[in-house]
Amino acid sequence: MDNTYSNVLCGLSIDYPSSWIVRESNQKYLSGQSSLLVMAELRPNVPEGFKTVVELEAENITAYHDRSIEGIGEFMEFYLSETNVNIKESIKKDINNLSTHQIIYETLTPHGNVLKTKEVYIPTENTLYVIRYDTSGSNFYDKYISYFDSMILTIKVDGRKC
Image (cartoon, rainbow, N blue to C red):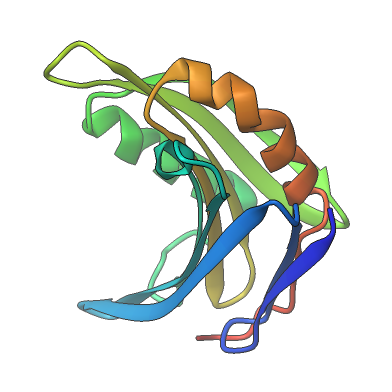
């Protein structure tokens, strides 16, 4: 990993390959007492790069009843199961002294295509960081998953509310 993306609003940094591009948005969405900040998208800088994206988000979770890693994992599994996806894996994993929950799931499109996604959740006292690896086809998932897994190993968060 040659470059580092840092978001000072939310206190997140992650390394990424120099052959990838970053599109920072810092777009905030409000929903009741909660808010979601879409920090940035990272993707391979190749013609088909639009079919693979790493999304970085931060959600205010002060209104959540259970902000533990177990509570976040259970909530996300329930939420995803309600959206008609096929959960392939759901595990708790510590990375760089951070407790994370990781879920890999597939979605079937109306045209019969399988979309494969991996989400990594990192809860802190006030913020849930979500790092999502999203692809438009399992062949793209397999092609870039090693990059995503390497990127996740470099993540740093400071837990600030954003």
